[in-house]
Length: 107
Image (cartoon, rainbow, N blue to C red; front, side):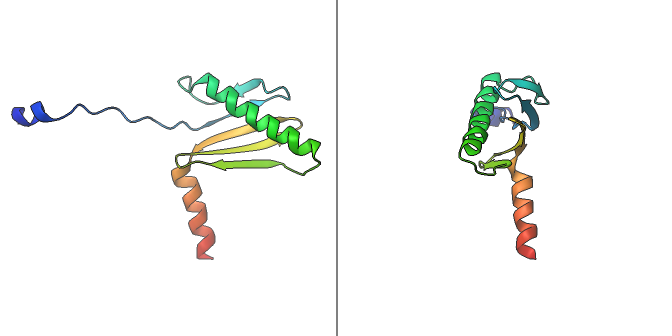
C-alpha cells in the first residue's frame, strides 16, 4: 500500500458552495447577511449592485418587476424588491431548481 500512495496525487479540497441571504437598502449597502464570513465581501457587493440597478431600471421603465431569478449551474440567485432595496437569496442550484422542474413536468 505504501507504494501506491507514492504515485497518487494529493487531492485538493472541493470548493463549498454557500447558501444564505442578505438585504440591501436603496443605495446598495448591505444591511444584514446570513452568509458565512468566508464568502467574499466583494462578491456580495457586486451581486447587490447588479440587483438594485436592475430593480431601479425596471421601475424607471415602469415595468412591474418584483422578483428576479438567475440560475447558474452551481448557484441560484433569487432577489425580491423591498421598497427600493432588495432581499437576495443564494442557494445551491442542484436540489432546488431540478426538483421544482421535475414536479412541474410530472403534472
